Length: 286
Image 1: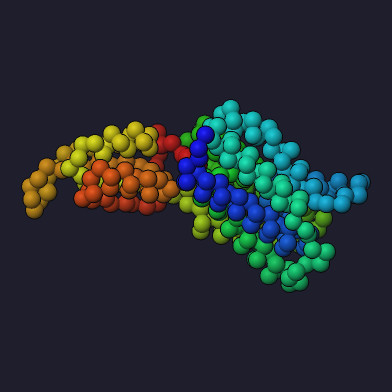
Image 2: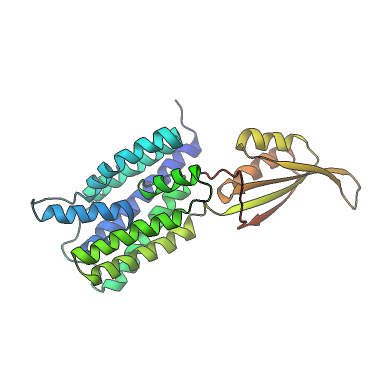
């Protein structure tokens, strides 16, 4: 099976994202004794507890993260989609390899812990953002969040993340010390802010299209599987009949809808409205 150029680029960006995230963790975060949030944070805590009983020659946090994700891989394959499953397992395998193979400095490269938190957070945030922007997934909470948002339209992925991270960082404070938990939270906040700047999957948009071609709406439905509402209008200057189409999409789908419209009617006029709150039968996609 021949892969398209777009697919190759997508998997390349997912790989780059997995590498940057692992680099940020191994080079900046782990040497300070800090912990990530989510499932990786749980894997790191288990790694630290395991080191108390067994001498390890390499960091096993990536391997533990992969093992914890196995039930979630099954969920992704059965309940979400095959493509989502493939991209997720590809990303997590790369993360496992990179987190296991990238050497961890014996002493922190940046001695100031706050500066190291910021640099590590930026590096990890860029990595996660690139992965998500390429429609990939790092597993863990990404899978759970996407699954529950499909099953329950009003489900908040953010609340799930907050609840899990409260548990992770409370455990850090209990098992280790409060400063470790606080600096780990700062690192996670920085990472999340950078990730949001790069990844805009959850930004909803409405699009209004003015076209003289009746084929545009059918192509949007056929190629994007998005519903379209239309009515007929007329230009005030020319009095020519015009189709007015309205549809709701995510920001990721903007290039696709632009291409569809341009290929059919190069003279079509489009208006994009960003950041809309949408309720009802609107499919969230990754």
